[in-house]
Length: 118
Image (tube, rainbow, N blue to C red):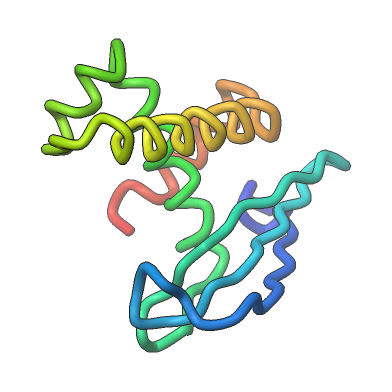
């Protein structure tokens, strides 16, 4: 059984997204008796699944981890408004903390390999 099969996901509908053309969901991730949640704004098809949620968590985490500062984050992602950038930066930092709470470095490497071409 690979690591993805061990991750349990609960998806709770929160209404229409104000950020995408899809719906907004609370995604509850349960792995090794550790539980965390995140908000996920789906696309217009609203058919996202476990791999999509985990990829989102990984990419947000990497966005924070690869930035040395808020200014670095702003340059990397093209932000001009510092207040808007800080909100995104802090959101990525929260995802980074959740990701590291859920998975060990070894498990993170396994997930990255499983999802590298996804």
